[in-house]
Length: 344
Ligand code: SAH
Image (tube, rainbow, N blue to C red):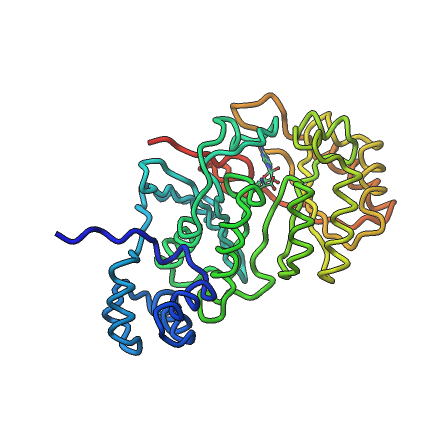
């Protein structure tokens, strides 16, 4: 009996496939054709790739397999947000969320099973860290959901479970495949990577200059308060974070997005608003304010309308522009910070 092939074809970017083609003494352009078969035509058999030389196809068939995620569960919220539970090959499961809006459909993908960073308000880290997702496990979240839709996914945000910049190589390869014109071909700016603020990884991204849109979970511009929310602030404080972001933005030439979760009685007083306005000074930014989604894991609460109005009033006075995000998918536990890794 034939052994099953050792490698997952969707773990490889087009340039990596080009190297494989050359090693097999075939022209590098076949990598683009293979990509089109996989990502545009949905073909899962190398023998169907009619413009690929037979010898190359049979080599690939021996070495590479096509992975699939098992859809274990699909739930739809009243507001049309959908949550998917996908089974992985090791028996664990991850969550992915589809957020349909008027003109776009955003897919929120997970980058790790669990999370190391254990932010004190986020359910995604509550069960600890299991492992990084592979490139194909990230790409397959997109392919699985997109395949079910008539109106296709337009945007991908790495805001599901995990810290994308802590799974640097696999996430960057997935971003490459998602944006590759021969691959999934999402626009360059349609993929957003969110981070809790890992400064050395932001610096690496600056060096690589890939034009990746970054979103940073800030939640407080005060080091003491941010540390209570996010232990990562012990390693990389707000001063080092903003320095790295200024360099990133000046290299890339587009703004960074800050996420600021509004937590009742904690990071919403006038002093917090003033510190936030000082923090964003001098860096082109977008600011999203998200009322905290209360959940059974933590004591933190959602602020009242009035508390939010007072906070945003000061921001407006200080000429800080922001978008107040509305909560989506909370009836199916698909809202920000409610996603979890499941051992099934
Ligand atoms: N680790 C990355 C990617 C996760 S994104 C990061 O930190 O950016 C998930 C977003 O949801 C983060 O901005 C996180 O801070 C936010 N979040 C977590 N719990 C939340 C909650 N209960 N209510 C609202 N947002 C929450």
